Length: 118
Length: 181
Image (tube, rainbow over all chains, first blue to last red; front, side):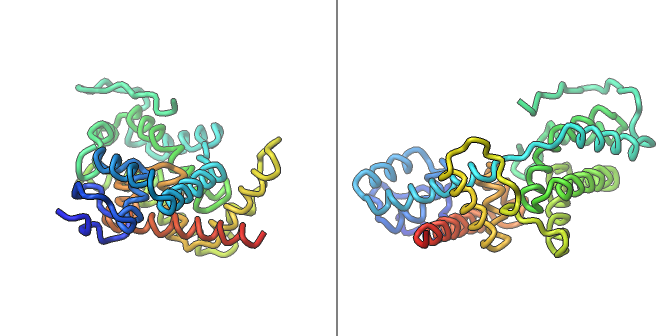
């Protein structure tokens, strides 16, 4: 399989690429997958090797990483207000009061809820 | 997570909810409330609008869970509904509040950091809606690109391509702004 299979922007992380040296055009197409850690290990190693010897590709990848870092720092995740969660939870209980039982019932195979907030 | 996007644990909770178990409703709610709210907040901008979107999305998703028993993807319904509600709100001019208009709560951050954040908001606001959405999902909310693909109803390859273009558009817009300063 040749490296030219990565013809589309963004590439396909599931397609392996050949073991020949990577060209700059291929690196550009793999850049985002590399940044996101969505490449196979052997491809990551080959991209890293190319970057060590190619200032232009290194700059391109670093600039994408920096823009993403600035975006994350600027926007961040929003956590909902506890008061809002309580109000909405109460509204859902009222809305589905005819359907759900006020008292919990133990059903076969019931699972404990992991802590998704940690 | 199965290949069709159904989480077996979530599917079990949906089934328990259908059987009338209130704890299952609570669990599904707690699993997703912050993520739905955060997604909506990034898209519609204001806290009030994001809370309304999240509330309506949960109401509709739970009703959907009772009415349609064909599949198990509660999260898919929930976020699909939230996405449509956000789009509806963005089409109402009076409700548009772009993130760059919000007050920066950076406290004692250095001035250059505040300036960068202002520039990033300005750059984001100038991008097409589909770019803002994919950047919000993948680079702010840190969704896996396959999960984002299901959300925006595109193939994985098309989603990666969209993300590729969006990141470069943001980078180029920032570079353009910083060249001007």
